[in-house]
Amino acid sequence: MSASKPQESGEVRIGHSLNEEEEEFVARRRNTVLQCLQKFKIRCSQDEVPNIALLGSGGGQRAMVGLLGSLVQLDKAGLLDCVLYLSGVSGSTWCMASLYQEPDWSTKLETVKNKIIKRISGPGVSWTDTLAKLKKYYYGKDIFSLTDVWAVMLVTTYVKEIDECKLSDQWDQHSKDPFPIYTVIDKQCKQREEGDPWFEISPHEAGYSLTGAFVGTSSFGSQFKNTTKKQDEMDMLYLQALCSSVLADEEEIWKWIKALLLPEIKTASEKMRQDPHSPPTDECYQVLLNLVDMNLAVLKGTDPSALDQSIRTTLTDLSGGQSQLICQLEKLNDDKTAGKKAAKQYMMQYTVDVCNYFSSERKLNSWPFDLLISICRCIAQWIWGRHYNFLHNMRDEAVPAALLESETRDYIDAGLLLNSPYFSVLRKERDIDLIISLDFSESDYFTTVTQTAETCKKLKIPFPEVNITSEDVKKPKAFYVFKGTNTPTVIHIPLFNVSNCGDKIDAWRKKYGTTQVPYSAEMIAELLQVSGKNFTINRAKLLEQIRVVAEAKYFQAQERQI
Image (cartoon, helix red, strand yellow):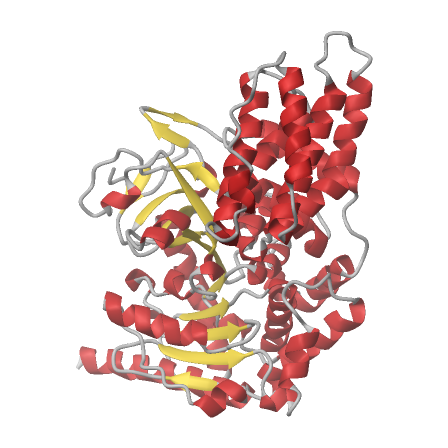
């Protein structure tokens, strides 16, 4: 239980110290930070180098490109080497994953940027490769969820690649880069408002940031019950999907299944028809097609009764005249008593009932029918990011009981709770002196920092007081500084502001929406420029705040020695 660090065997580490690998990294990176500060003639010592964290919020491709443009300009300003930690949520993690493909990316950022832009401006992943990857996910894991589907369906659409690298395999290539932290949240903790929702994934450990409960990243997802049941470490494509599920839309997923997966099912049905021992695939295919259409009808508020009747008739025929245990349709249409929310609930049970029929009768247990049935069940129950719980049935007073009970946990996009990874860097042991928060949110650019301040107050975590005027909300400036006593200094930088957009902030927000199709090459180039401009125009202000924090830490150390 109290292992000093997670081992290959899958030990769990309970404690608030940093793991040994991160401690070693911090010690090395401080030399880089020190040299950077000395170039600007900022007083600091080897032992008292300020710990600076750069945060990238969520925001889909806008956040991905916005973070890239910000880092490029921060590098040109000579300040990237000041950054100790780089942490992201959702779309910002897409940028991080692309960067950390390249060994020591921060030493050749312009070249790396051009490579990334060329890829995301180019052709997408083929359907053949997408389906092949989905098949690997489906048969390679104990637990399959919508996150696997989301990886090949959504993430590849924007990042234009299938990245099968593993996070733990990359780290020895990044001795000169900031330490990366990817962040998600625990869905059950969020819903029940208990336990610790803040979950971080670094090259070495994955676990609960505030509780201090971790497992080796290569063992995250494995089952810890008497002996460890090893699962393959998640790849970077899956990690990006795990971090970006806030973009999920139920109707769009059903549409994707109908447009892409059902034709594959139909082709398989025609091939299987030639086998006299195969199930009646044509009839089964029609049931699944009607089930998809029925879900779409309920989401759109149209009458699904004809589809329901067709499904019931076919299933009765397939079972030799026996009626099927499927919830009654009347409840789906009774808007006066049920409403749309209840209709969806009944449709969820209806979908599960149909899936259970195929499972119990052992029909359609071959590819790709079994995949579609699993996806339908996952959509109906809205299962995302499900993994074995590495804390299940453990006993430790330091761990909230809510984290110990269930055999599995669901991990989802942190943007569903807080659209910025503050709590990964607010761990006391990381001792952060300065936080540079880049906010790429779609509308209110201040929710992340104000909500963090409120949460920190409740949890008694040091954080400066944050006051935002109504004028700032309407017309955000390019640079905000929040300070407090014995708290980290927080610099907050909204993506679109009066300095880089003038009076056209709303137009920029509308042009670069979160859920729109991938940006064109021209849009990407424009967004890179406008996001980078925030550091061009604020370089002197940022340097001054770094100087203030560094020298304050230096003089405090001098006073302690006296």
